[in-house]
Length: 396
Image 1 (cartoon, rainbow, N blue to C red):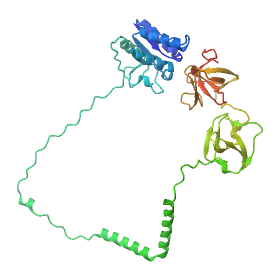
Image 2: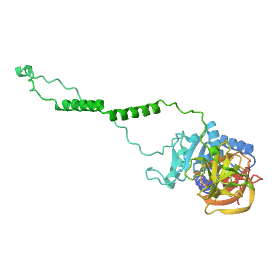
Image 3: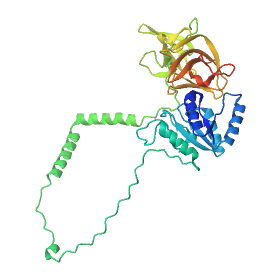
Image 4: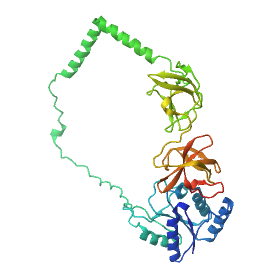
């Protein structure tokens, strides 16, 4: 029985163990060979392999869940009507991909809440799932049996009371009770009204409060088209630096007034060029007046600037000098603010975009490279989304 195995290059070691198990159990595993030739040649090879196999095993990990190639392979398998079995070597830290929505997974790791999980149990369930026709894989958490709806109580028969003339007797009237609470409330309201009518000072203060409240409530609403506040009205001296200045290694905050407590108009990334046309000294510190890309005017503190583009500092980073020219892979690349999939994405570059590697670090089992874009912006990209000028994987 021929089985197609879809995985990423990062999970190659675990995929080799899975292929060895399938071969031992009488299956013939087939790999995609995505490193052979161009993208068109690879897609033609995958279509040919899928047409000749009976099932597809998808190695679902944090890397393959976001891989464009794996998504295309599973979509093509579903289009050809092939059975798809997803196996998990470890617990997912990301959201399962949309192209596997409402599918059950085979757990090859131990999960306390899953009664049939682990490497040995996963082997048995995978073999059984591949030999079944049609596929019937069911690995879910235990579900409690449905609770039956509550049963309505049986209707009660009306209780017939024996005739008693006492039940027909009219109710007895209570004696007269003085309404002290109502009388006290009326007395308090009357006293307050008399004090208001006779006290001239109190009436004057009440009229003033009413006038102020009316002015606030009836005041015209602010013009919604007014531009947000900026530093254009702050009197700063016109000044241009002798050489261009850039945002420091930690970036720079452009504020609407030359004070640390002022409102931040924009957070500028590290090594961003600054358009400075003035400066102002406040409490012994210089603040530079900058013009942002959207035309607003703000102020940047002198300590947040640098005379040349400086890459953001990260612990455990190995500098690469001179930089190495690379390109984004055929699926493009995400450039993030720091190494890690959970870091904020700065920009996404298209396939073939030119980048320069200036540093590297190891995070989460992957090698991350600090790259510099053509506009001077600096960020981080993972090794499996970058290729050399010849199209080979990057290993620096």
